[in-house]
Image (tube, helix red, strand yellow):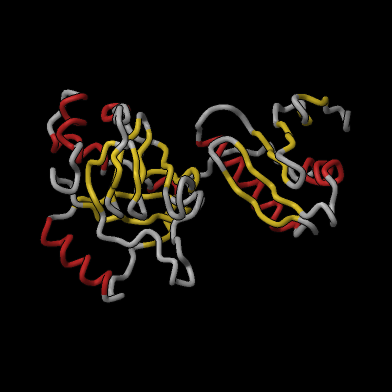
Length: 262
């Protein structure tokens, strides 16, 4: 037992339901809940900020997920219990959403059609909508980036309308084109590289979402917001040429939280 916490499943449970759990011999997990929510994500990002500011000796890497934060550490510099004690002091229950808070908004130009989005028609039929209505709904929300995973640059976004929620493919495709925008259940996201996948593909962006040769291979981070912008085939081809020639300027800007499309 540590400062009122009780050991639970190989870890420590706090009174406010935050859990500290073992994850192998050189990592721990801080679990903030068991649901996908903006509030939990905000707690995770706040904890990350606090840890970075504290500059704790021995911490190697922080990996945010939907509901938890993985902390990799050097066991030769810090032990599990000492690290937990330190991290407990950084927990912050202040989770108030401030409308004037600035967040990063990234616009993703996207071509929605049957060629780039082979499942667009299915998503429309499944939800008893027209394809135009699916596009309008999908582009009408600014999506919070909860985390990146599966492969470098793959975004897991929250906030999609249930009006276009659609089950995954029963049998995943062997190859999905880079830049493909998909839906899986109540989630939406983008494939940065050619890969197998079971998400329903409704469109494609000409942007390069992952560039291993760049100083910043992935320009999207947890806590950012994504805004999909519907473009024509001509616009798609023009942007693609600029991207290939390194001439395209990304539309990334700071906006107040109250200005986001909900």
